[in-house]
Structures are given as C-alpha cells and as structure tokens.
Length: 346
Image (tube, rainbow, N blue to C red):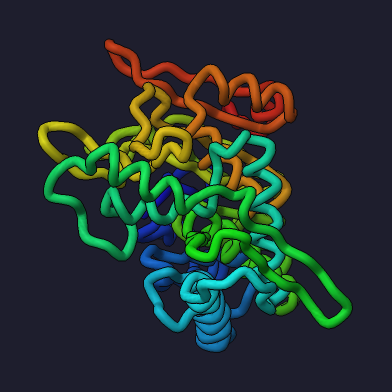
C-alpha cells in the first residue's frame, strides 16, 4: 500500500483500515460500515443515518464504481485504459474519458508546481526499482540503466486537450509510460464521495488506501476524525488527529513500502530528478485539500522534495501540510499554518 492512514469515527476509538465498528454503540446508532479491495489496497465506507437494509445494494454500487476506476487506471491490467495508452507507440492524440482527462490534468498541474517532483511519467523508473509490474531487482540498477529509464520520462512530454467531441491525451515521446497509481487512491475516494451524494447520503467517511474524505457527522453526531499514523512499521500509533471539515486528506510515507537490497532500504518513492529512491529524512507528508485527488498529488510531490523544499512550497502555495522527519533520536514534526486549523486537541 502506497499510503497509510488510521481513521476513527469518534474520539474514543482509533481504528485501522481493517475494522472500525464501535461496539459501545447500539445497533441503531452505529455507523453502517462496508469494505472491500481495489487497486491493490483496501476501501472502506462508513455511513451515518443510513438504514442497514441498504447495505447490500450500496456495497455492490461501491465495488462497481471502484472496479470501473481500476479498469481505467491500473497499469497491472494490460487491457486498462491507461495500459492501452502506454501500449500505443505514437504521438497522435488518443481519446480518453473525462475521468482520465481530469486526473491527468490535475497531475500535470501539480507536476509543474513541484518542478517535476510529482511526475506521472516516472513509471519506467518505478518499474526499474521493482515497485511496478516488474520484479524487484536482485542488485542495484546501474547508472546506465537509470539513465535509460529517465530518457523515457518527463511530464512535459504529455498533455490533455479538450475538443467539442471529448478529451484527448497526447504524448510527443512515443515510448512515454504513464503511471497514475500515485493519484488513483485520491481519485477513487472522490468518486466514492460523489456516489454517496448521488445516493442521497450526506454523512459519510470514505477511503481508498491512504486517501480519505468526509462529509457531515458520524453516528454519534460528532465530526468524523482522521488520525495520522506515526511513521513506523512496528505499531499502529497515532501522531495527530484532525477534523477534515468536509475536505480530503492523503498521506505519503516512505516507511511502509520498501525492501532491502544490498544492505540498503529501498523506498518506493522515486525522485524523478535522480532516478533513484529518496534518501532524505522526510518520512511522511500529509496534505488536506478540497478533494482527495488534489491531496494525493501534493503529498507525493512533497515527499520527493524533502523537508526544506516541502516547507517552502507549502508556505508559498498556502497548503495544509503536516510533515514528519526522522532525526537521530526519533522524529520531529512541522505543520503549515493552514494545517493547524484542522488539528483537534480534545
């Protein structure tokens, strides 16, 4: 899983993505909870004020929506929309859905504003280091291999155009490989929120992987809470608690998705500039934004940039950002002024 968040339905119980029923509530007051798998991770939906009789139909509708998103975005499916685009080795405009156009447009905007730190064309490097469909390398890739993969990347080689008949995706590098996995969780989370609204539900917490979005209140009439996890793979401990106030949140961390190679920890977060996994001490970046998709894009870019550049960007763009850095004696944190407005002290 790319990102890890703990979230909770009330102040009394922090829960993981594996379960969130509050057993102290009566069945009448308890949230309606559904969960499943998509995009190689877990999805979860908690609803307040919804009759249990609707659970089966909602579960099917949710899974159908997420399956459709996966069929567009998955690089693991050879027949997905994005895989078909990657298999096209030409430079002519290719028709895409409005959904695909939206996610690529947001990705390219954040790519420009992070000076390429968030780059959805970094797939060849991700694959080279063993975090895509390709297997993990048995030895560290050579500089020649890294340079060859880098030559196939660059968000500036990709753009979206909108015409009267629809949206089109185009590349001027025939072998450009687009990987939307870094944005997929946020995109799918926003889709779940829209599905809830379409179903007439206005009190919900929806999540896919580490992207979460909330509206309204939980079953006890309190705001939904989200807990940012401490950056460790040894325990599920809470670092900070936020009230999203109807926003989306996403966390990117280098502390869960990694492997050991030649005595070094290899992070899944790849720096497009160097072509190598990040080495700095920023281990977690959390972003709160209007949509989960936007938060999902910013957190990846900030993780690549590292502490100092991430702080500067957050302040310049007035982003709600929470950073956790590894120090010799533990961890230290920093939050932007915009993030402080979401922190819960009770």
